[in-house]
Length: 522
Image (cartoon, rainbow, N blue to C red; front, side, top):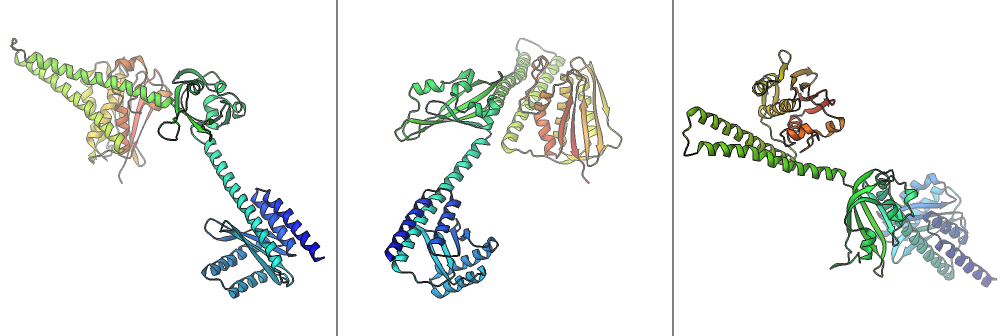
């Protein structure tokens, strides 16, 4: 009879062990372990506490227990584990377990606690409470310990799977929410993963792209660099001095599914199997439209600035050479006129260089040094108009400031640069002449200064970029007029350094109004 009981007990243990070790869901593993333990020990209440990353034991599964009591049980567990770590005491252990029995509020008389240990590392604690006192034989203890060991393996595997699954979901979220397009290809160059950014770039839905050959989705209208399939056929990827294979970069104009094109750069990174063969290819796709625009702007700037610098240098050199001719006897008036031209062009050259240095410093340091003092913007604007009035006969200059316009704190030299730039642009971009008005308004907490012209105006797209460094509107007039594309960039930087802001309103063919605000000191 006793032998039959032992056989059934072992069969039950084997059946339960197979069931729990076949599971990878941690919650299900804990439920099966606990139910099996309660059945084997003829208990009424059971719980499993697992050790978390901080080393604390917390109840994760229960049987026959009011879940509202879990926080209190966690507190007792914390005290219990601390007392064991400080030095094992049977009396202290029994005292805390009796507190648990009292907390459960049921006619329970005995507890059985099984530590869950894997490879010498404590994972948790399994406790079963029962309503009677019973002595366990050495054989019972051996069977229970075997069960605890199997349970520990199942819990360890489930925890490992849970961590792997969490990492998988975390990486999937990173891929899906990446600002760059990401796709993963198999060894046959079919798409396995296709993120949302790539949907926006290509016009393909992920559900349509996944499973398709990459060449059906990534269609080049113009390509710089080797095609992926050709690169693989040519021996890519090849490892060099390290075990890390080289990446492949391709850029060009991608033809979207809707027929539009987009400038992209794609970096292909191979993932190799143990035998060195390509298992997957990870592609990072980046929209390089703005980068290309920046490159084009920089190229235009270099060409423009070369011309802008050459012009005053050539004029200075020409007048200096002329005045220095040994075979000429110049009268004083000609010499004065020539020297005036040299001085004016030198000032122009110095201004260009100062703008370049200021722009470079702003890009590096992100701030601007100001020499603050009292500034009367209405008087500053009046002096700027006086300087520009003799330079044109086709424009009518109007000053429109209210009386007793308030004094502001600012750098007068820098603010004069802002006004000169805005008035100069108003003159350049209204070639047919017209009214140019410079005025101001007093508003709560700040003043507003504006410059309005009746010139060619701008589109909304141009208005969005007009304050960018090196930007010049793409028009016939822009190409004919002098400029480096730094004036408005520096003007806005100066205003913002004063704590203000700059804006523009314009319509093509109806002129433009540039405005800036400066704060009033209380």
